[in-house]
Image (tube, rainbow, N blue to C red; front, side):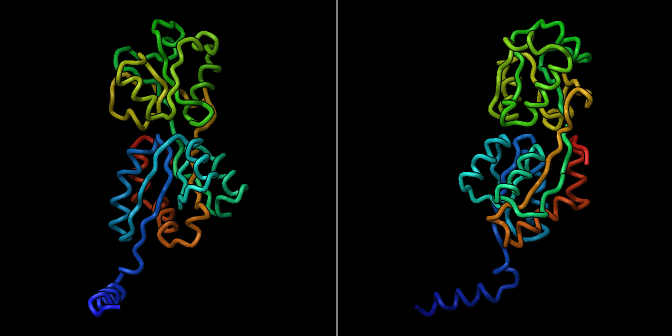
Amino acid sequence: MNRPLLWGLLASLLVPGAAQAETISVAVAANFTAVAEQLAPLFEAATGDEVVYSFGATGQLYAQISQGAPYAVLLAADSDRPRRAVAEGYGVVGTQFTYATGALALYSTTLDLSDGAAVLAGGDFDHLAIADPQSAPYGRAAVETLAALGLTAAMSPKLVTGQSITQTLQFVDSGNAELGFVAAAQVVGKQGVWLVPADLHNPIVQDAVLLTPGEHSVAAKAFLDFLKSDAAANVIRAAGYRL
């Protein structure tokens, strides 16, 4: 080994924190995108570690995990996939916890949704966007809401399905659908929003879990601890989630 390279390696070992800093890969449910992006710099400032996110529908992310994707942490939009991850050997026993409880909203850029149930029952629109209920928990909540309102059959021909809750929001914002069921956190502060009563669907409990690729990662465990901190809770609550 040449001397400059040797001195460089020695210097990196002697710099405080240099050897400890990590980059972790975190799979994040699409509805939590904006909040996760706010949390990253807070975590990095507190720990010196870097977090890299992959966003998508929870079902799609879980499929990637089951196929060997090296995520250290999963932030799901439900509690089922983290539980399955532990049961199927992809998650670490004893690490699952609820980091947020989501709320469903009906959103439109053109319609008055002061009474969203009445607008849905009236059916004076061509397209209603929902996320894929097989892979996105908010999509499943939307289907449950339509069933609770007795509108499943009437709405079926009008449904436009997004692969994730992010794409569902894009359908509405682009005008490809006059209205759509999205995460309330995605439309905080916007007009044309009807918060769906919580008793119309099952609770949207969003759980986190440490995955086996992150089992020995100090940074991955620190990230989960950070999610439980007051600093993270303030950001999550301000975005429209319940804790």
